Length: 240
Ligand code: UDP
Image 1 (cartoon, rainbow, N blue to C red):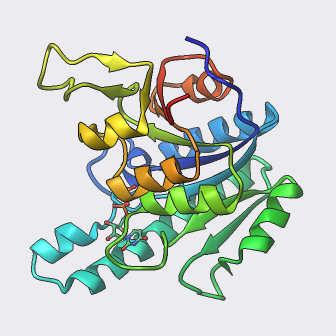
Image 2 (image 1 turned 120 degrees about the vertical axis):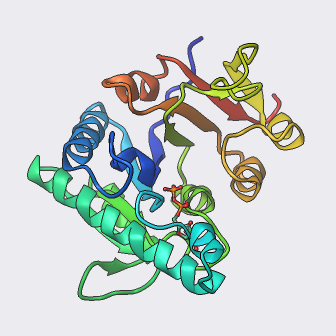
């Protein structure tokens, strides 16, 4: 199935992708590979911005389960996303891609604060903007941050890179009858509780008519195909 070509996109990169085959932290080889794929997408003519997660380092819910105060644990999670953003920026600049990191939690000596108009200007100048620290608020996720930034930046689509090649009717790892959708509506995702992004992120994309494209980012070269409207992926969108 051929999907539409989107010019300005937001890529959501989960922290787990950056840990490669490891079980924790940042794998420099994997970060380098992601940087190359992002550079290829830029060279193919896409305007890109990125939201990075932090699950490879710290998740607020897991911290709260161990006894940390939930809001403090979430701030720790947001700080983890800044580490990932700096690692990705480093890898991109090593291969000559101009980038800016903007953090929703201001930290002036490390990166720029999030300023929407400034981020738009960076993109117009061909820079890749990496958004760090999620929404800057506890009790949210970087999926919601991705939906929010996609709307603010006027992106035509949100690309969610995961370890599976789309959205399934059930978990393909445990249910042999699970089938993959080429296309599914936001309404079906929410009412059937399909695993795409959290409900707040899905609802924000639905209300702002921003399609979500779910694809396997671990498969080498797949991102370029999917961004070009080909390859295997699921598109989540409003009913036509
Ligand atoms: N987080 C938050 N507010 C946000 C975004 C993230 O509090 O707007 C915290 C939350 O604790 C979360 C952690 O940052 O668990 C890391 O983000 P996330 O779990 O979304 O990362 P991913 O799963 O994409 O690696």
